[in-house]
Image 1 (cartoon, rainbow over the protein chains, first blue to last red):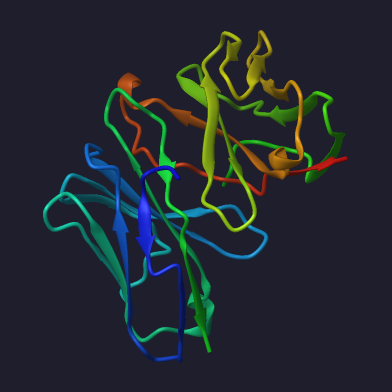
Image 2 (cartoon, each protein chain N blue to C red; image 1 turned 90 degrees about the vertical axis):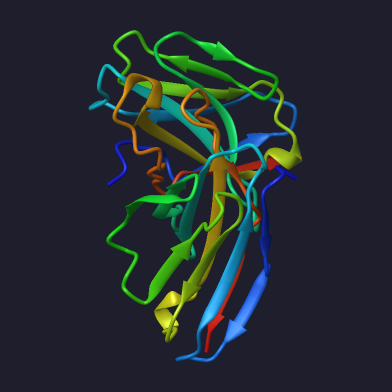
Length: 114
Length: 115
């Protein structure tokens, strides 16, 4: 257990539905990252926050995706109008900045879109 | 795209040393080498990182060649619980400036430790 928690751990939804995932980072960590991982591939970066500011978004993050970190603590990732191609593991990681480089990953949320 | 090349899979006997190679021939002077691993159905786990000197911690050793174009992660006494996908990543450190922080993963090496 790294101290990063994600909820839910598994989600099954029907195409077209909206889903929201939550990530609780290690409390003193000011950087929070979201990654997506499909079967047989390494994780791919989606977006990251420094405190409450969203500083970078990958081109993978289409306009159906939105992430927030309103108080600089937990973060949510919402996918609107889900598609079957959104089926993946969604990973959250946190780190201290700038002196510490290690990212601590949560267990992930596995999404299946039917 | 990932800046590293790793073999897709390796086997290792339990109790023996596992030596996982990584090529990063285009590494820049301010880029670090990081290793993470991912055990099935879990999130990636940090193992070790280095710039140019060899590094050792309680999990592993990292050997970086003098020209920094390749490195080897060494698990000195592999156990069945070390079976995982191992990722070698190069990135600029944020202390050196300019790092956005995100990790760029390749496909990694699937290490199977066998009894």
